[in-house]
Image (cartoon, rainbow, N blue to C red; front, side, top):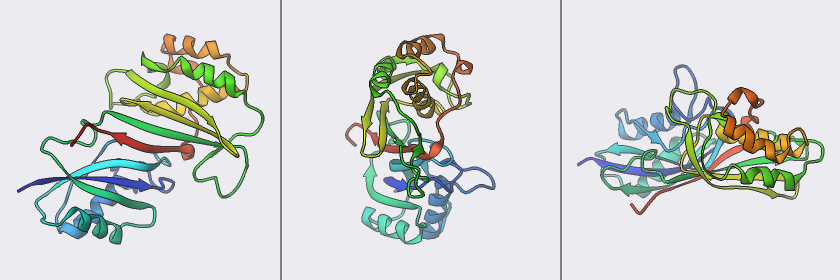
Length: 246
């Protein structure tokens, strides 16, 4: 009997070319598939909930695979972590019902983007150093314009992975931390580099390069060329993926 196993993972994406398998490049998906092949002695395809980019991390990525193995879910966790490297760890595994798909069954995804105000070797892999003052209240005002269902074409880099650019953002908040900021974004789905483009735009507001009202105007215009480059990848972490009851 074929089973569907849902796994939750965390990883440091610094040294990977993203989640999705690519030829001649180390990827998280490829690393997990290689680990499963060692355990199960056969090729096993893994499907992830989000295709994180090169250098992007995860604290709660979800993936699934199909197998006829009789191993328990706890045994899968122990076996995978025994062969995965230091940068990838399986946090949990559970049986999923027929028809479950890590990406298609997901209801929402939450990302965190970390900005540090301290230029330190200890944060260079997981936060974006931004010197100088930032107007936090202006950033929060600008962020409010992006909450809701909108056409986010202006905030999505070109990709073959989607043919529609409307997304529903249910949360976009800016929190101050001891040494910087954290942006939390929750949506039903995201366009390619959408979170990093949103963060870069809000930081431009914080620096006074854009007014809060400009963000709504840019959103309505739908012109990606009107925005600058995205924020760098190291500050971005996929925090969690939510599903209905499984």
